[in-house]
Length: 82
Figure (spheres, rainbow, N blue to C red):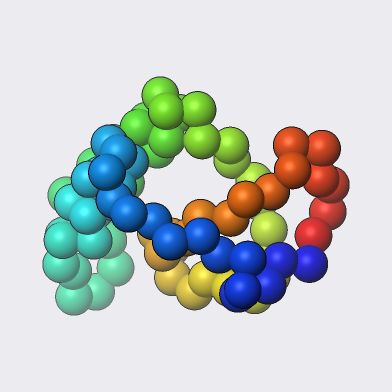
């Protein structure tokens, strides 16, 4: 199980941090508009380019809420499950 204490501070010096900042800067009122979807697509592409690992999990287990909220964890490559 990941705990909030295992989160690592993100100092925001890489391409992905800049893409996240742009993604969060797109303000919406109801649902996502084209600009928000396009920004998310660029973020996903940047994550792949920078070799971030994708995983699917319950937001409660990684202590995140809305889509696009981010944090860093130091997780062993061999870890399976929570």
